[in-house]
Amino acid sequence: MNNLALALGTFDGLHKGHKQVLNEVKKLKNASLTPAALIFDKHPQEVLSGKGPSCLLTAEERLNLLEEDGVLPVRVSFEQICGYSPEEFVLFLKEMGAKAVACGENFHFGKNSSGDAKILFELCQKYGIIFRVAKSQYFGGELISSTRIRKALQNGEIEKAAEMLGRPFSYEFPVRHGKGKGKAWGFPTANQSIPENFVHLRYGVYASRVTVQGKMFPAVTNFGVRPTAHENGETVSETFVLGYDGDLYGDTLRVELISFIRDERKFESIDALSEQIKSDSKKAVEIFGCSK
Image (tube, rainbow, N blue to C red; front, top):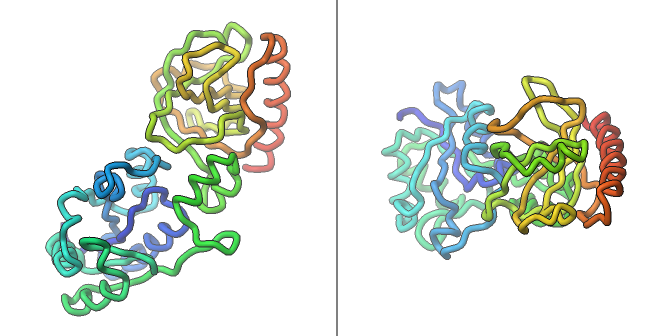
């Protein structure tokens, strides 16, 4: 790879702050440089401390979002470069074909995070690399970060998370076969297993939307352990797609959460659950109409 304009960061959430860095390299497309982003195979915290933060995106989603944005993902092993000094890291980027780099104002790099944006600027000058720095992005007077987004999701503050992401929070997982209880009760659902390392959402019912065969549908998503169905405690996403009557088994479905409706709870009867789902569906349609 040559003639890269390379964005630097963790890009674990691709939120508004990350997008500013990506926008800086996209501006350099006119200089015959290819906009690209350095993507680590593991989160730096996982390598350095043995435990990384919960994922806001699957690896595949992140790559898809970058490609949709016109940015080439350049994958690198973090273990390979984490011991580099700041200067060794810049030389590594130069050898990769980076003619320009961009980072955020609070970017740190190199062994023991000894390099910052100022040092990166000086090293880029030394080695003839174009340097750009993106302004930090704020929401509610505080810096946007993946940590803040995770906290918002844990609290069920879906709209707040969407504001910081610059898009609705979503996830993509294969639709698996369930026990068929939802279908038997009159509300068939698309069931998706949630990996243990994925971000911990507030358990409950959400107004959501999904796109099937190019058409967007309102939906109701229960994210949790399904206490009424006496399941095994596994965290599952169950989505009732309103107005769709088809087979989604085996498909990878993107579920976009729009708003938190209520907490998950156990119902005394299927009739009570059915009535609640009807009420949730009505709210979801209303919210869907406002969110399109």
